[in-house]
Length: 239
Image (cartoon, rainbow, N blue to C red; front, side, top):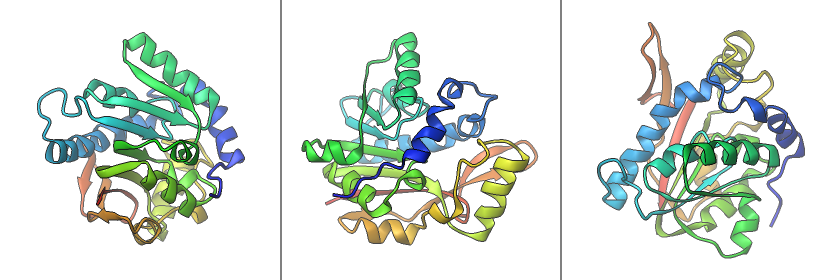
């Protein structure tokens, strides 16, 4: 299996590890987007696993792929997930582990890759891979490994940026260079992935229609929408 590791991408985010939990820092855009992304995951979990209330993932074996500093891992753990979180950056894992310990969250962190876990035969009922696929060295290898980690009948949820000219203007030029919502240089336009590329790279998954995550003007913030031209989420079930 090809490696998904991109050393330049790992180094880029490792250098910013101390900033993961600073809502006004280089990852501020993810902090602001997080409630909407987690709303989508929660609604999927409630429909698929039947969970309700404050712990819709109670007892659900869950993997957060490319967890970074744990911005998604921590809320998943609070939803009751039996959670493993992995990242290829030791520095990011350190930041995530420190936050989880201070918050009293039970999360198994590991510095490893999707393909390494797949080679061990690990499987999970829910796999999340939010804002990671655009940073890997080989998209098809990543999708192959990620979907191998989904147990039959389980769910996978991805979020990323579409490869469109609108995304180039808004997510790269606008968000990184002008608004400073993400570290400048965080995204390479040529590495962005379209919904069709996700579908074709993971044919074993029954993919749902992608859903957009769009910024609403006049202070309304981020919301789910039908516009997938820039940020979008995609989920599917393994048969």
